[in-house]
Length: 364
Image 1 (cartoon, rainbow, N blue to C red):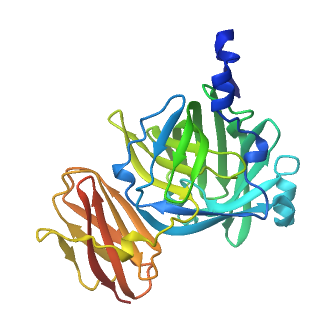
Image 2 (cartoon, one colour; image 1 turned 90 degrees about the vertical axis):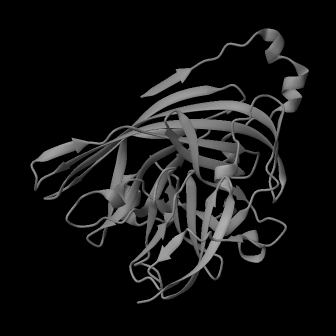
């Protein structure tokens, strides 16, 4: 069900020459294309970013971002998907991407479900829509079609636009249980101007998206269900013409009414090498205890975390393999390293005071 909020502006503003020259308009052609890889760099110092600045004719100077690992998102043509998937999403999809499906890996089911799957997208001249996804269950692709598709953007996308929509899907697994997810998505184009990253400079629209998500789970073995408390997720995106994906994005959660950034990226590669592996970073403080050493299945970091803290574990190739958010007041952080290969790793502990590092080892 679509809820569209229309904004009526005075005529002198609508036809203002400054407005028409200063801002861009984002359309369907600016969204991802099939069989194209979009390279991006993860942001390490995301906790230190101030994303509140916005409005008309802004300059967002993020040239001092700390670059982490580089990754590539590759979108798939709909025709490349397995036949059962194409039949399940006939006339409701024309693009796809292999990605994580939120919530699936945390379902309390007797048979674990991987959260990796394929997101199905319907890109039209008027909207960019998530229509469903597939995941592997008992060796077979399991399609899940949204009963109420999730409209990510509505085109054309212009400064001051506001849009609100709902989305809903459910999964019924015979003999196991039932899972459903409902959300409200609120989109606000709250700024336009120039964005500067370590990789490039762009003319952009800034988009703030608030997602209110609620999950419900029913277990056949228990004969009862539970409904999780609603979660508030916020994403700030900077969109540019002909780039396919946001040129920069910062995502997080609302905690006690405040935005807590958790992750972020910018497209492209910075001009200089990865600073996390080539530039000096302070060693861990003496009162930070890291044990056991070497670690087998769990690595513990014991410390008085006075600030919200981001913990990252990199392999020696510079790839981020584990990331965890620790809230202020915590005394210990636990990392599950059971899925990592034996070897040496670089641990980074980052808060608003800076970044500390330590070398750790994993054995099998």
